[in-house]
Image (cartoon, rainbow, N blue to C red; front, side, top):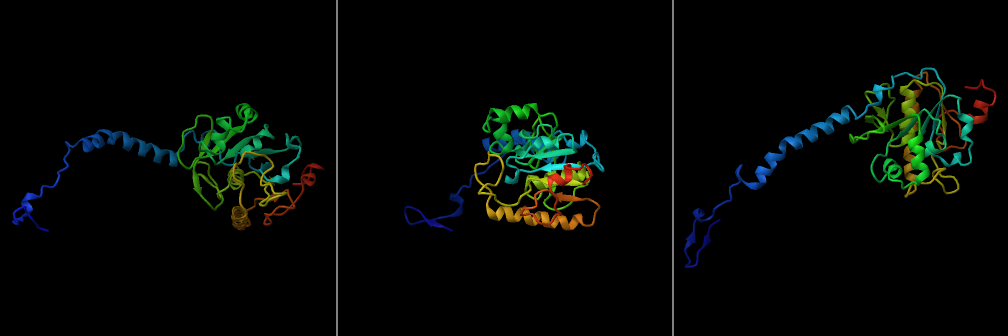
Length: 274
């Protein structure tokens, strides 16, 4: 569009001088200077998403627990007051999140929340208290992190995310997570081919207004979130029916109703059940 000059004359396009950005422009020069570093960072992030930092598959083989009994311990309020010592030397044990403080003899500590404001950060920054931090340091089993973002933590092993729903069969390929640590821990047991697998603290609902048997979570899990967890386990169970795996819920009052039920007394009482 043409405009009028001071004397009413029409100013032509030749008076408009667009700014030319060349490789000599300071912004362009800065981008070119930093481009190798930016590309290397992107390449490293993609690499760790596919090949996580400190992959767990380097120290644990698929099927390493084949045919062995395994207890997977969640955080449900049904475990309040439970004597975890009953599980010592009774089978392989995977604990999810903060349950490691109550079962320090577990074989694997599994978690998914790895940011500064979630499980890992709260423990390492001492925000869950000195006992939680010391128990973390003293834990002798493997600490395993579902590393979706390619974070580099030197004190834990990583497993990549394979997606939400499915049965995992390879640590190198990754774990299905169902958007909750209990689901991911169960898939870890499946990948190690433990059988049978007993679930403790997989409640899928509140008990006396509590979502966990322990503290440490700023915002309580909502009812809608619990329902989504339950649906995920129901869909997983449909897949498990095509396999020889036995997954048994040891809380008969659980809101997760898709797995067969037993009690801990039935499993440990006579040494033959399961």
